[in-house]
Length: 369
Length: 250
Image (cartoon, rainbow over all chains, first blue to last red; front, side, top):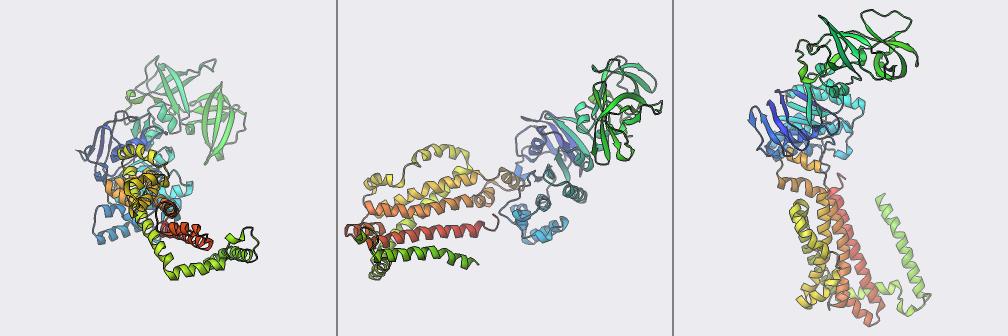
């Protein structure tokens, strides 16, 4: 399977995208609607025109038309041929390649077994469930042994349970086949659980590329931070830099007296500079106002204005002088009432600077907690 | 179950024929002279068939319909495929055909009479025109409405333009094409009868006109019944074919 290189890819949506995807890697393109994810897939498949260059194993494929690029493409609506049964859908590409009959038969059996769908062989798409359609479409895309697999939000129409099952199956099939894959989604959970690496796209540009943990714990830009769930973004001014820590003021128009907090020192910090810090809701701890608070923690007093269940956690919104801070507390540990005054606390190493590629944070400093 | 349903649908027809027979026999209809009983029509049908008059005229009309319909449909299908598939061809032909399509088939009769005279060509051309446009537009619509994602997928699976046309576009346009064929098969019969009534001296339409001039209402009704059965048979044939070819996946 080839190494894919995108070099300065541009068109009416994408803007100067460069990306390298390793042999057998599962790269997830994550971003909101209109970010250019599908456009980028269409460019790689050769369906639309572009500027720049695409290389498979160092060889340019720019002049190769779509029907000879050897890409398997799974579209959002799956696009199974409604007039063909499962067998004919899966063998469509093999017949186009004019493979021998026994070879087609062998590959068909292999695909039916791999997807665990031998009993669906003679059914038509109208008689298949969402999950079954998914498997058939994946089998059809993989059957002609493409060099690259492209998937465009293939799970978006599935219920959560089926989605989880299919995602697990897909991940194992991708590992088994070792096919270089580009997977498009707007669902951060799907991206974080699936991707070897994730590229976050916004307005046709790549905001950040990294392994899931890197994105999740060390987003580089405010957009990435918000997209992967960092709801707490604080604008701060650096007032003092010590050996391992820095003291910063939270700049918030709603707060009369600026909060002074201690944060872990990052190379990007310069005295007097204004930067943004993000804190993951899971790093916020809530304490009662009359209870004791560890002196090592930063604390801000506020009032719980909203709380809602989110999986195993309670997501609480705390109003701190007109500014909202979000905390994700395990349900078992959450015994606060709505409108109760609390301390919102966080350790100095919880805030992470959003400073794009200019912050000069080393790989070592980026390591996940 | 299907047979019971079919038999059930025949009951209203039998009741209608019975009322017709009784009303005509008891002279309940004003102007009953022009209203023969159903049995008299059947008798005349038998007479016309055994004498060879009806088969001869019927075969003339049938041949005209078949030749005109088949050639018109094939031409409509081929040009429709080209127009549906290639936008440049569509843009070239669409303005011309949009001007010609609204003209009713019988509207062409005077000009065709001058071009071809009273000949078999005249009747075939009328049916050709009548069949050509609906098949053309149904084929264009059928091809243009195929989900673009299916074409995308076929391309990524290695299909050439021609392969996409034959394996994706045409099979999926079949439903629209059959709708055109079904509607036009009936229309072809109506048009040929009308053309034979006014301009062509042979065929079911001409027989109908002769019967009218002889005030033979029974023969007129026989001709109309033949027309009705043929329209229905052609329509049923195409419904059957459509179901046979697309029923499994629709």
